[in-house]
Structures are given as structure tokens and as C-alpha cells.
Amino acid sequence: MDIITICEEKLPDYEEKARSSALSLLLQIKMFYEEHLHLDDEIRYVLDGSGYFDVRDDEDRWIRIFVEKGDLITLPAGIYHRFTVDEQNYVKAMRLFVGQPVWTAYNRPADHLEARKQYLTFLAQSA
Ligand code: KMT
Ligand code: NI
Image (cartoon, rainbow, N blue to C red; front, side):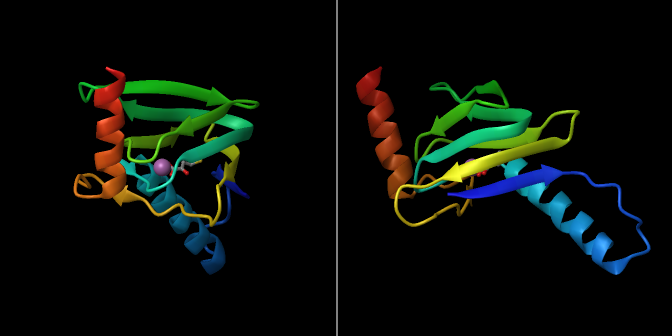
């Protein structure tokens, strides 16, 4: 596991280090909000703060899931999803992995990936 914190710190913008850390935070927020999938299950335990996981249903509509401190969420490998913080602008979460930590995001379209094909097969079987 590792721990990820997304929070907007009010740092003086004349400082180069502060500027670049604010920029990397914005890039990270933007990256999480791009629709993507992973090759492994995404398991997140919210330690503090809150936010939204949006997942696609079987008809490709968004479903918004609010998560807050104490919540555990597992997104299956291959499901399209995105994440955003809410107006609190703060979330601290534990990212849990089975085996090697893999958190590479594949932005949509990623339909050629085996994880996507397996997920669709799983969906069709459970329908
Ligand atoms: C992801 O890949 O979507 C994330 O790790 C979201 C941030 S964890 C609260
Ligand atoms: Ni993800």
C-alpha cells in the first residue's frame, strides 16, 4: 500500500518550489478526472476528507459515488472511471495493491486491453 493526499495548500506563489508543487497537484487532479481504467483492481481506503468516484454503468452512463473517511471502495480492473475531490478540496487515501503496486491509468479509449475485454465478459455473464 501507499498513501496519497490531495489537498490544496495556500502557498506563497513567488516561491518556485511552491509553484511547481501547486502545478503538480493540478496535473494530478486533472489526471484523476480523465476517464481511465487500470489493469488491476483499484482499492482505496479513505483515511480523511472526501471525494467522488464516477464509474460507468453497463449502458455507459456515469454513476457518482461519494466517499468519505472510513469508506473502502474497490473498482474492478477494466472499468472506466474517474475521481475528483469535492468543495473541501481534500482527500487522504490508502491505495492497496495485490502484488506489485500498479496504478498506471489508461485513458479512454482503452478497449484493446485484455483487462477491458475481461471486464466486459464479466459484465455480460452477470447480466
Ligand atoms: C485513481 O486512479 O483514480 C485514483 O487513484 C484516485 C485517487 S485515490 C482517492
Ligand atoms: Ni483510477
